Length: 105
Image (cartoon, rainbow, N blue to C red; front, side, top):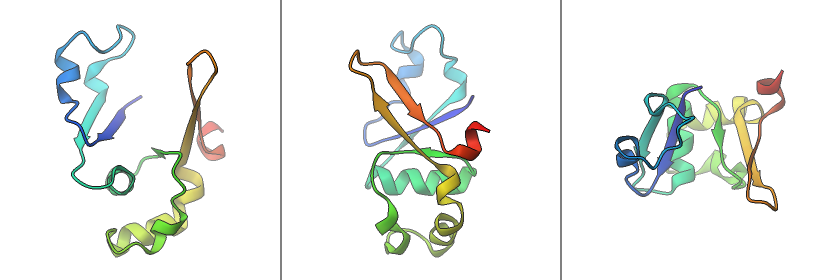
């Protein structure tokens, strides 16, 4: 599994430290530093890489946002239900990914 992490903070140093768990292959993580809204940047990265993206933000309003290129907005209209993953945390703090139905098939 390859993962692209979009953050306002520069997280690239995590790969060079002991801050990533032993069970995670740091070579499969790609960090993208966002200067803008991380949701917008995540959509741009998902479009560029043709991958699913994960956010709990309601992104329906972004289908018409001027900050997204026209091609990305067209892609969102067609692919959004199949590519939008969400997440939650269990009471014990465990992370749980809620993947789109087509991804889990």
